[in-house]
Length: 195
Image 1 (cartoon, rainbow, N blue to C red):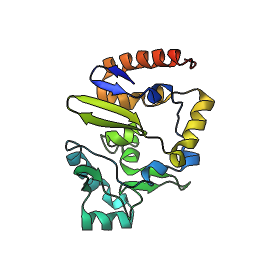
Image 2 (spheres, rainbow, N blue to C red):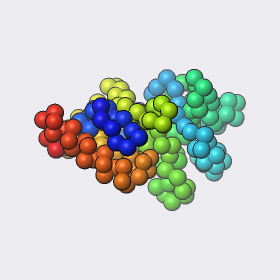
Image 3 (cartoon, helix red, strand yellow):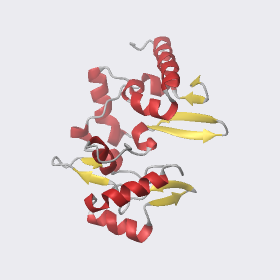
């Protein structure tokens, strides 16, 4: 592990090659799992705004679940987005190739909403665990979801630390990211990984 400012980071985040391949994984991270995406208290009002604006575009089953159970639920005392029948996030829509996509991100890309998606989704497969004033960044590698992205990253030479640059800057800022990038290069050099 290595430290950048108030974050302690798993070496895997520096050495892992990763670049999403939606054509192969079909957006599985929005569909498969035992819980919804973790969200913060500050994100909940934005998520409610997104739901109110986009709900007519969401799947009928998602609208039923949100009406009956709410948009956000508490799982192990932490808020998370609700899912439909233990599967898709309620914001999932499908494109013409049957790829699960985030309805919020789609609206953001089309200029119809001013927020891309929850930070935990933007950072996936990196997860943040807060302990006191420190944050621990760990890789949550799920082979059934991430194998296509790992193969793609190995083929393109893209490291997870670079693939998630925008999400890391969103979370911690430019100065942190520059320090993080340098630290990742040092970790890779020590492990004999090509930089």
